[in-house]
Length: 160
Image 1 (spheres, rainbow, N blue to C red):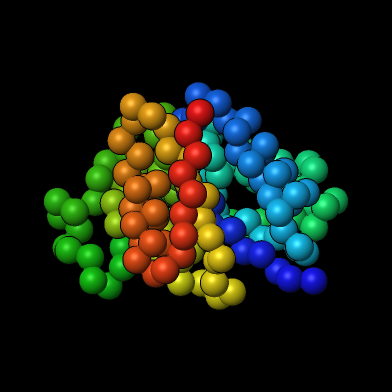
Image 2 (image 1 turned 135 degrees about the vertical axis):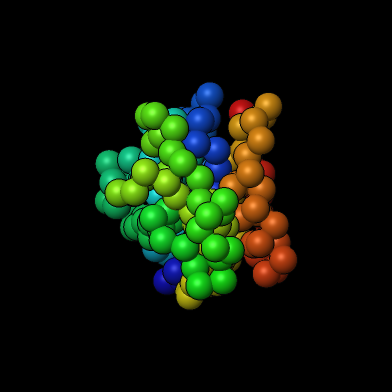
């Protein structure tokens, strides 16, 4: 049996989050020839692509050989090559759930660093699935898509 690793990337605010579960079910039940690992950024939010993938995997997918590999960004810590903290780190707005962490500010480079790590991690993803939300900037989704394609990982865009 062949292991399939999928790199999942997508909006934090999908208007049709059910498309994520439907896509994963189609892959798991109709395309994959063995176990599936879905690697995602563990971005919170009821309508985020990552959360919807995690919910489906933990409710149905696990019973069918689908596992998740969540890789949350470390918003609290900067990398050694980040600029000095003054002017670099951003203050969280009240109710900010997009940048979870313990500190009142966050490193804006954490998301792109996490995306690069998801692309580089072994076993290497065979392909990526991107769920951008039309009309939104989709910065993280676009960043991860570019990184994956630059690494030779084909990415399929799925929009509602």
